[in-house]
Amino acid sequence: MRKIQTQGVHHITLVGADRQSSIDFWEGVLGMPFVFEQPNLDRAEENHLYFDPGDGRLITVFTNEQRRPGGRPTPDDAGCVHHIAFNVSNASFRQAVERLDERGIHHSGVKDRGFMDSIYFRDPLGQLIELACYRFEPPYGFTHAEVLLEAHLIRTQRGEYAIDPLHLADAIERLAHSRRSLSAERGARDPYHQPPAEPS
Image (cartoon, rainbow, N blue to C red; front, side, top):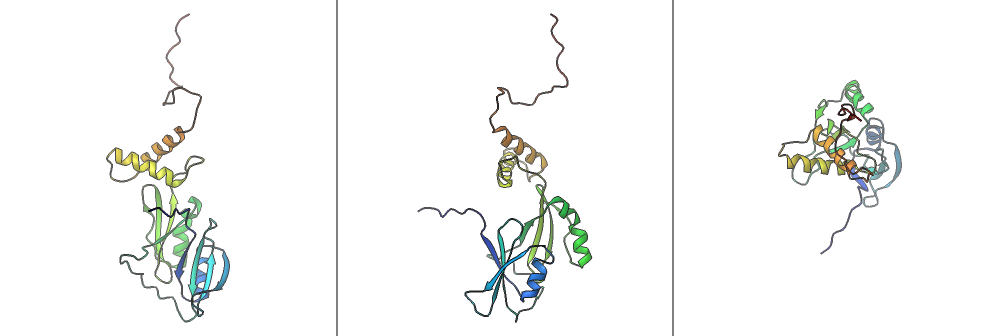
């Protein structure tokens, strides 16, 4: 038995209401360019819209002019999607509460997740959306996932309950330390308080 190895999210497809309400939300609220459209090739009465969430991947929406936004929360039964999270820059995140408020969109306010900050709100169909902003940048050549894996190992080795910035900082240092150096000793040192020079 062998695995089928994935290499990233190709796209996520949601069941939308009518075409215009889908464009108004995904592009008009979240700023995702509307990049492609064709019929739903499995259901002739539906359309299929494609949006770029900002990383070149795709969010796609099946639309039908007979459906209207309902606003009731989506089910949270086993097998259902709980929420979809989108990465936003720190600059955009700091404006998110104000921009949601000015539209009258109910939201959670900023939630501390240890390694990121989050804001939750529902789209016009009731799907829970998260705006997520990382609190760290990975060292060059590493990914956020690699930092989180390393931080998890550090946290569990220390027997601590949840991730916090110290685990992230130590993980980043550990990953950076994995790069080669000409120094034999790579530990922390203090160049500001050197012992006095030996008399000659």
